[in-house]
Image (cartoon, rainbow, N blue to C red; front, side, top):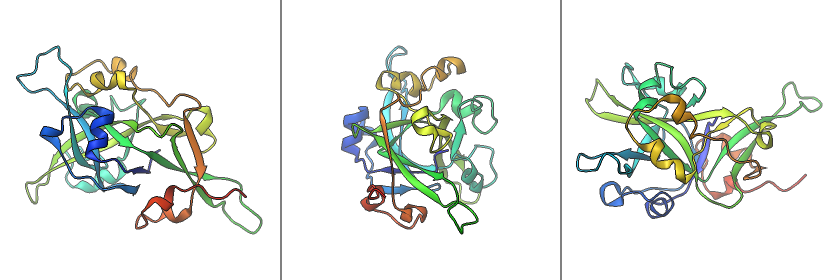
Length: 243
């Protein structure tokens, strides 16, 4: 699963990386080195205004959304706390994700993400301590994690909440020794097809989603300070000195 990640991009840098339409979707973004469920995070979606030709690529817009998808039929938002990830193998059929998979697909930009590795218990320990690892592109590019988003109306306030989930798959060999699941990513040539709100066959959409190419990602242990969501800052992604 992906339960924490880092995102330090600005609207300008996301425009450069994803060609978003900032004229219609400029938002102020703050760096977050410990992005956690229920927080607001940048999300890139595709719109198709009426004046846009049917065969034209969708208009890319930048927004902020709450991490943890809240289905439209939910009675309260707490259900989203359990829906921060969606298994790509079943998302097209699961009631919570089916509608979003059909027409509300997005890109979740990230600098990198965290996973926790549980090794063997040391002498005197009942359980092994989990060591956080930070996983990030070796070339320092921005990751485009595959996401689904949904709109939910709060019955208490009549306010609309936009929320999202991150699609996951089995981890590749390079990362599988840390955790058996990892986020799915999209390459730039697949952005338009994934973001297009028009319904497409699930099998056609799944072909767009790929694990990171072997050797593309770097993983290194970082401080357990990331375990506490209250901690933030660039020190969280600094590699620990080798032991």
